[in-house]
Image (cartoon, rainbow, N blue to C red; front, side, top):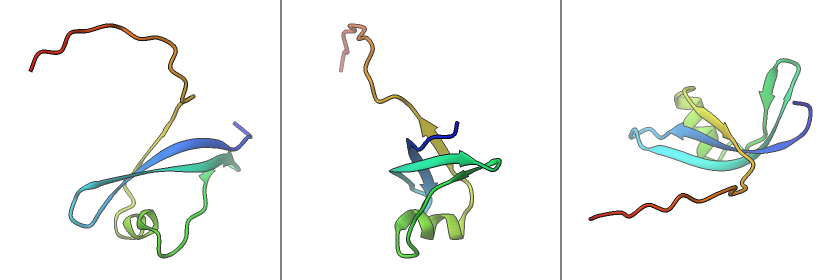
Length: 71
């Protein structure tokens, strides 16, 4: 991948709750690169706990299965 793509980054807050945020990133030089500011929640979370998940997708719905949900 050599182009900028949209991802969702999930980090962990200090209290253990997940924090998910969309961001633009690029894979280059053997690593994933993205920008953030020191005051942003994802930066604070990553400084305290480097565990994270990065997900990618097209954002396009290609089909719908119909299910009946019972409460």
